[in-house]
Image (tube, rainbow, N blue to C red; front, side, top):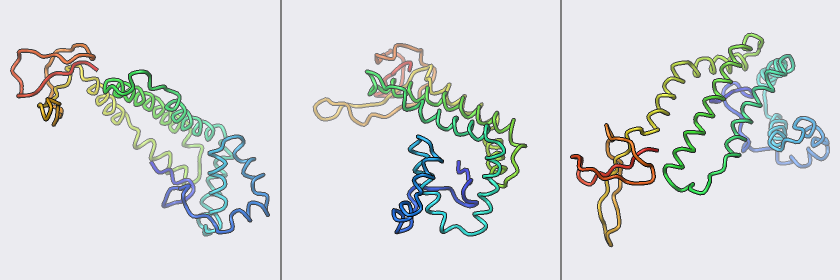
Length: 224
């Protein structure tokens, strides 16, 4: 979701072109002192501050006024803005902190890790929606009002119910049917998933073969 807190009609990008004399400007105006004060020890915020300030020389008056209103909201609601930043940072750091483990190349391990990540993101998104519900009336700027409106609209109960349904189906309680055939050197080739329905659960570390009638070449891989 584009937050549109720096521009009305587009999002901010770190790869935008900076002035040709950016290093001279930073040195002559001692902007590193300003950037360090804005970012603290956060290298990412330092980079964002640098690009935002240096690219700002191309902004028109309307954009400057738009940002000033948002800045006023940030000053008046510092704790809420810090909570927003913490939620975004938690999502990134928690994903980085989870090790892949010994069996990271197994499809079951990749799926299990992905499901765990999705559940974590759902918790964070629900926290984001709760934060918006509790605090959106405190903000006055056009940018923050649009930001909170989109959160409350997009992150509805129906949305979370739909996502939860997809996560439950990705547990594959009935297993997965896989179609394959022998190729050169008796190696498996043309492997593709078949429609899985009504198969009994089993062990995720084995392929089970049953006497039931099923599509030619289809075998069941059960239980992730």
